[in-house]
Length: 188
Image (cartoon, rainbow, N blue to C red; front, side, top):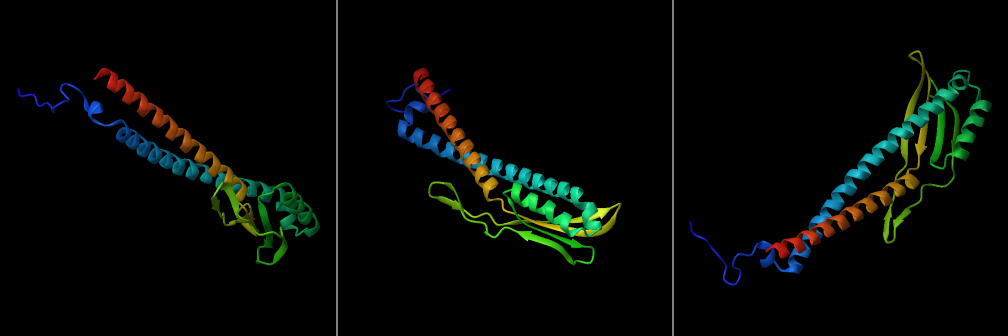
């Protein structure tokens, strides 16, 4: 067997040949890419969870007001929807129609969704989400409820959380890389 040795690097591993700054740059690139991948995964997961929760909240609202929609009790519907609009900052507008599409009641907040600043120097607009849910009792249609949701507040929280996780992942990756470099050099 023939042994190949680099001149001046006899018996030492790759870490001893690779300069510290080159290794650090490689670790930084890997850590940032891993952090961005984690950020994308976490944002997608949390956004899907938020949409599912929003849909469940609308189903609950429909369940609470089905009798009033069927009887077209507009004053009672108005009271229910006013309470929802006052207590839920994310609801932008609610419209209730009968089975023929005639609008029974429509309420909305006057302000359109604003751009939300997530982190310094990073702005992101979140378009309104629209949920159209049928009002049915034992399969018979009695109307629809259309709810527009402003996801800005929740979206900003999701973005902050995802950036935090990405940063933590990058820091852990860098620390492990540096520890690996130090131990690799001490063994070589």
